[in-house]
Length: 188
Image (cartoon, rainbow, N blue to C red; front, side, top):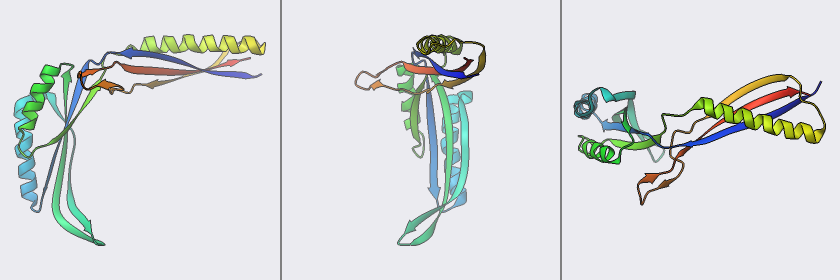
């Protein structure tokens, strides 16, 4: 008994429909109490603006050191509070939100990720299965073998959830391509 292994690919582009704004409050200071106080000031400002929509992704307090001329020097404490804010895909709303974030005490860093929330994974799987069957029929026909029972089916979903191509001069973002790969093994 032999096996024919084929990977079918289902790919479809979906429009960007949401934005995740990641906000990083990063404070460094010699005094532990000062680090905590400044972080809380920035966090309270953001929490008052965005209420329940603002979620903590991670929170970390570390000792802060610098390396100079083969010597490690203790500088104090560093706090890193990573927050996430999910928004609908609306540039006017994003602009207003960024204006508010830019006024936060202690100037947090931020970055934007464009995502697709409404992906039809069933449709992607159907496309991948059709592709696998198509490829298997061609290979079996050319090799003059008969496809028998399916031995194995395995799925891998590749959902990048970020912008692949952007036209910044227009502030318009291309659709995001999502892919499902399905490995199908037939007995031949």
